[in-house]
Every structure is written in structure tokens, then in C-alpha cells.
Length: 591
Image 1 (cartoon, one colour):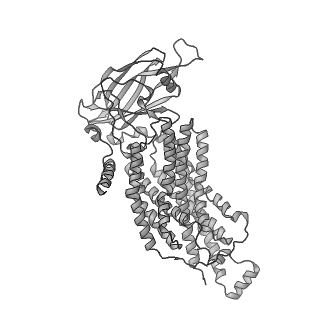
Image 2: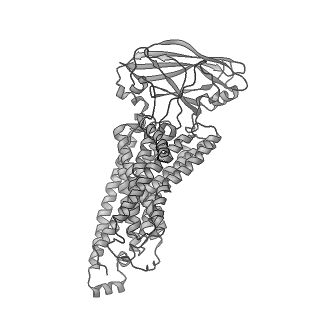
Image 3: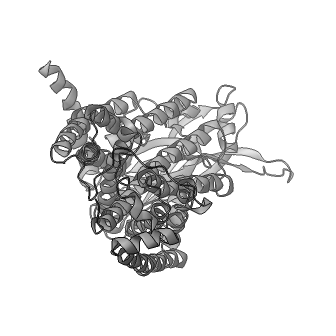
């Protein structure tokens, strides 16, 4: 049994340590004069549907005869991203120009002309990689035939690829691709595909070769800077509001509570007694659905740390320049931070008197991964139905499950044991009562539902602009690289969410409603609901996506992100309000 486990884990470890196997030139990015440079073809798909991708050979385009299709081995991140790099067969050599060389020939017939024509009409693009640099081109274009009328457009396919490659010393710095020689798609037409290569010297440094893919004019626009400045001003305003108003109100509350018994009775008769003091024996009572709530809190703490470290690693490591590195990094970091989920969830569960810690631990382990895996499997079924390359391979899914079984779950188990053993039961400033008091009738604006809906408005406003940039980069072929902005916005989101929910919970407690745990979590988590509504608006107004598959992928991945954000912002709200509630009840007298 031990040998079988080792055999199962070994390929996973090798896949993580050695994500790619490639030639010496590609691994070192250094080439000698005349050394072969491989052109890898990756995928094709309609321009308006970024996730609807297919294998390059699915259109039936010809390949160089006598040269076998060689696949480039992928790391886990590449497999999760839907990459499948295949040797194109076009032979180019470092610093060796090619005037014009025939790549392959094919004849259009009834079997392939329909697919190719449809791909041109849907604006199909294709992606290649040369020395880990991406290159894009169009399959063809709708044009007016020579001497044709303006009303009728015909599908043309480009038959020549002109590569212009810049080099510096022994390294490839820049690649440009121009599609030329369009030929009309007509039955019986014989197509001859050719390519040419022109090498030019450049003084650009190798470390800056990816800068041309970054749209600095879009991401570093003045509006972006202004939105961050506006969010910072919001943080200053909210912090001032919480500090001045709440602290002043609480000071008056404490002064009233310190009155002697006779004055307290007079205050009760006058109806001026502060409400939050009257529920000090109920405010730390066990919340409903304790196992679920502890699992939400534990997972939220994990995502809180994961987001912080993920953004920080992206800022330092420039992961956007390495294909598949971000999914791999997030997956490994998620597995390693499962200890935090176990510790915080188990500690919370024990503190509130939970007895079935194993159930809570398992729920924490499957809460977010189970939801995400369910959606991914459904999307995979849609991708397989469409024969799309976006379908995640079985090997990749097995690798993810293996990481969860052999890394994430053991860390979750030990974290839960450590958390529950290091925590004392019912460790609160005020001892909870055995029976809860009834909640009095309240005004509509202090109802938990009202506070929960209103709690996400300002946090969403603080991240609204950044959501636009994130959605645009993910769904519109842009490389998101401004992780410094994202880190600052994340810090702003933390402060705004805490300040808003503290104010909401103060109103809730003042109306003698002790159900602050769920109210705080949902009030903070409601930010994700506004993000989902914005995603719906973005889909219909900012994109040109169409088709069942792309729609399913858009809303499927958006649902995973919004659930992630719900757990994250809900836990941030709980952290802030928990500190606030424990602080105000720590200083009052309790029987």
C-alpha cells in the first residue's frame, strides 16, 4: 500500500518541480547561431469568446508532411489553463533569415471548406508560442472580392505568415507576426501555405521583453489613479466617522452604565437606557448552524491569508510573464494555508461549545473546493460536448485531487486539532445565559436583512473600478500586471468592510438584537452580490460573447469568484466586528 501511494504521489511532485520539459535553448532562453527555434501552436477560437478554444488542428488545416506532431509537456498551471502546445513543423533557426518557404499544401473540399469558412466568419484567432513569448494571428478575414459589389463579402484565408524576430546577444527579445496573401475560400481551391522569417538586432534588454504585452495606457490611466485616491479618501472618512461618532456614543453609554442602581432605575423608567448593554448575557450565545458558521469563518481566514500572500507574491515575482504560473501558485498556496482554515475554524467551534469537531473539519475541507469543483466539472462537461480545448484533462483533475488529499486535508486535520486543543470553551468577556431573551420589535432600518443588504454598498464602491480592470483583463485578452494597485485596493477593502459592518452591528446591538455573528458575515459578504450584479452588466454591455458554452464559462467562473469574495469579505467583517463586540463588553459590569 505504501508503495502504491508513493507511485501515485511521485508524478505529482515531479510535475510540480519540473513543470515543463523543453530543449536547452527554451529552458535557458539562450540560442547559438543556427540553433533551431521551435514554433509551438496552442489553440484557436472565436475572438469574442476567450474561453471557447479548440485544438489548432481541429479546422483540418494542413501540416508539414513527414514531421510527427510533437507535444510540449505542460505543468499543472498550463493544463488548468487549457494549453496544449504542439510543434507547428515550421523550421526556423536562430539569426537565420527565411525568404519564403512552403510549409504545406491542401485542397479545399466539402469536408473542410465549411469549417474554415465558418471560422473566418466568427473571426477565429490562433495562438503560438516562440521561446515562451505568445504570438497571435487571425485565420482569415471577410473581404470584398476583386471587382465584387459592396454588399457581398467573401471569406478569405491568410496563406502566408511573416515572422519578424528581434534578438539581443543570444536571446530572443521580440516577435511580430503579419498575416499576408489572402486567398478566397472556394471549393476545389488549392492552398499553399508559406512562411518567412526576418531577424533584426535590438538593444532592448531581455528583462523588458514582456513589456510590449502590457497595456500601460489602459491600466495606468489617470482614472485608475484617481479611483484609488478616491477610495483612500473614503477610508479616511469612514475611519474618522467610526472613531469620532461611535467612540463618543460609546463614551456616553459607558457613563450611563456606571450610574448607581437608583439612577439606573430612573433611566429605565424614562426609556433612555442603552439597548446593547441589556443583551450582554445573550450576545456571546452560540450562533445558529454552528458547524456551518465555523466552517465559513475558517475558510474565510484561509482565503484572507491566501489573498494577501497571492497578491504579494505576484507583485514580487512578476508571475504574469510565466505561462500557467498564477494558477499553480494559487493552488499550492491554497493547499498550504489549509492549516489556517483548520485552526481558526476548530478554535471558533470549540469556543462556542461545539461537540462534533470532525463534522466541522470535513465541512471546512469541502466547502469551497467542493463548490468550485462542482462548477468546474459541469463546465468541463460543456467543453467536452463542444470538443473544446478548454476542457481540463483528467490528469489535471487527478493532480488537484491528489494535492487536496495529500497536502491540504492533512494540514486541515492538524490545524483543527491544534485549534480545538489550544482554545478554552466559552471564553468570552460575558458569560452567556442558558436561555436567550426575546428580541423586541425594531424599526426597519435596524433589521438584520436591511443591515446585511446595506453593508456591501460602500465596500463594493471602493473596489468597483478595480473590478472593471480585472474583468477586462480576464475576459478581453489583456495581461493584468498592476498587482500593486490590487494590493492597495485589497487593503482599502479590508478597512472599509470593517468600518461599515462595525456601524451596522452597533445599530443591531442597540436595538437589543444579539444575532450579530450572522448579520456581520452576511453584511460583509453582500459585497459579492453587488459584484455579481456588476458582472451581469459587464457581460451584456462590455463584451460581445455569445453561445451556450462561453456564457456558461463566464457565469460559472464568476460564481466561483463571487463565492470566494463572499467568504473573504464576510470573514473580514466578522474579524472587525468581533474585535469591536469583545472590546465594548469587556469594559462593562456583568452579573
